[in-house]
Amino acid sequence: MKKIIRSFVGMDVHKATISISVAEDGRGGTVRFIGVIPNTPEAVGKMAKQLARHGELDFCYEASGCGYGVHRQLTSLGHKCIVVAPSLIPRKSGERIKTDRRDSEKLAILHRSGDLTPVWVPDPTHEALRDLVRARVDASMHLMRARQQLLAFLLRHGRSYTTGNHWTQRHRCWLAGQTFQEQAHGIVFQNYLETVWTAQARRDALVQRISTMVAAWSLGPLVEALRGLRGIDLISAATFIASTGDLSRFESPRLLMGYLGLVPSEHSSGGTIRRGGITKTGNREARRMLIEAAWSYQYPARIAKEKAEILVRLPKNIRDIAWKAQTRLCTRYRSLIAKGKKSTVVVAAIARELAGFIWAIGREMRLPMTA
Image (cartoon, rainbow, N blue to C red; front, top):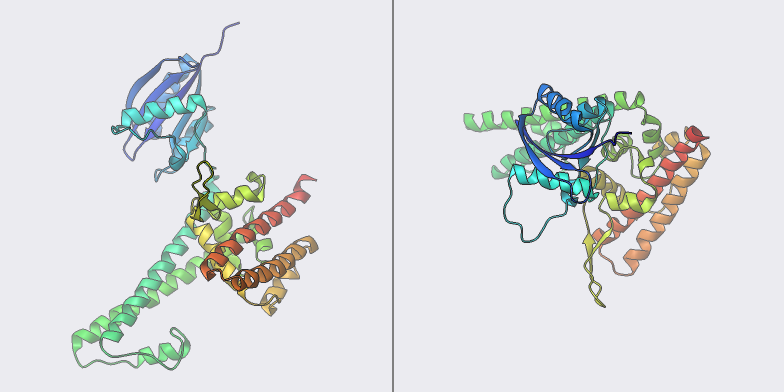
């Protein structure tokens, strides 16, 4: 029987080109640089067909702004392919030369030895919703900058609103009544104001789109279940799930906490133990949503009217987890504050435990499907 030859293919993917290297199976297998091809579906398909003549192929490349198109094309052709976490690739401290050829050869060798850490690749529907969520975040940041620019302009001209909160109905009426002697100032003010209203309309439209798409999404029930937790609404739940993906890929809550970068960093050697702030690895938006939600646990445990309308639609096991999370985390917050901990440190600890309750809800949502 003919032995199947297995080869590991490292690809250094860029916007226009892909550098290809192949490492043959075995500790002493030959490593050779194939060349550079254009980053097009036609070129990738031709390359995979030519290499497949020599045996089984196992591809890998670093996650980047180029997305997952190459991964989906290669897997659809029947090949194995992983997308690698760039921050977890082993690197030599004394290495001072970096080229596309060296990078592709290094990926092929590390893939052969099993030293690469793959990232989770979303399906096209999940990736589309993730992009929509990111667009909402970008729109919110744009709105915040536009508001700051308008308020800074008014402050430079001695216009300060002191009778209430900004961006309320009364504040909008106050803005509408502002006039300037210089024509140029009036033009600038109207430009800033129109930018604010346009950015707000863009953000609100994206929020509505997310609400519509989540209702028909396969992970929509999980998003609805997470809304039972204090501090988490539809947008924050959708942002979290779109950023982290299906929670079933995390075997324990500790893995989810580590993925979100909410665990303390550590640098210990011998008998010396040094622990620092949280690692801040993983997805930034998912971590930010948890941090914002954690601030709500500084108040006593209770169920607001709006939250009660959501909880009544959820199964009892989900409601029990949500109430257990609220009672524990509210008590935990007051306990840590009483010990003299900084509020930011306490909120990070609350967010870490909140991730554990989110994992528990995700597990409960899977049980009916696996029964």
